[in-house]
Image (cartoon, rainbow, N blue to C red; front, top):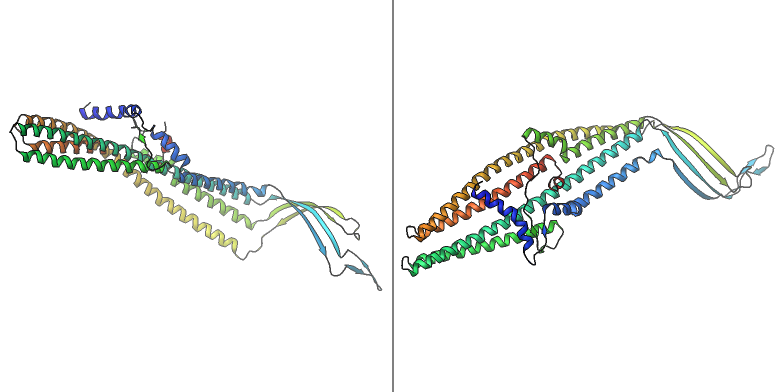
Length: 437
């Protein structure tokens, strides 16, 4: 293990302990805890869950024709003329009162509609699947946004430490320069040069503090917390398993990507809707029964029970049914083309994320080696300066190189973590579950 690898490993393992030991600090927040909050209480996730519940109610609505409809009614009738019947040869007799009350109930049960209701139920269930895929997509996007913001916050914290260490190194060099000035070895100009660069380093430290505060506010916003609330993220040790090859990543994306699942469900739903519309050309068989009572003294039986069996056939609807079928066929064709286009886009996204992971791994190796080299260069330049065989600018350049190497190493470290999260998201993996283990 190289010096730089040990350096980053020690910090990663001791950071949670260090944060917990600080007096008066806010509790540490793990990535898993944050993901649980944004995926369960986040605004986008809540909206998506409401859409799923609405689709679930639509499924219940589509099943309604399987159950009978029951109507309870009552009506009062007023007639201008009392109904009468003529008697052959002259005269008439009343047939009904000119005012009477009628009330009763009627129940109707559909018996068979050639699969129309079943297709509507299947269509609604596929819409529910599409909404569930949409909810998974919203949840995963919220999780990815939080993961990226969390890594940004961790990176900003490490960059702040690098800036602080740079200031410490310049401060140490200033003391060396002042010691040599007192010894009469160097001029005052050399000390002034160090002081100017030290002041510039302090400004960078202040900028790093501001960046950290902004990154913290972003994470707090995603957690629905006050923007300026204290927050101490915990360094992540280990990452979820990634696909071994690009081909495996493509296959996983085709199976798990929620955007593709959404489109597949929408295509299936429209196909079932087409079956339901086609069934409108066929008859519907039903049975109806009920009870009715009329307060009419001229009727022999004021109350009566009835049972009716019937068939409804739609002979002509002004071309509405055929027009709906044509619209559905066109929509299905459009959705299938959209799916093919989306599949290519998903494959490109997965490939880009895969290549980013591979290049990020290589960047880490280069960046860690540069840290070792920069550390050795700084050590040698400080020794040479203290021994009087080097000038101040060489030490200052060495400090700058050390800061650059450490900054690049941390950026490479978190760049790989972000690339891994992006690859898992492109594949369609449940990020909350993958990082929640």
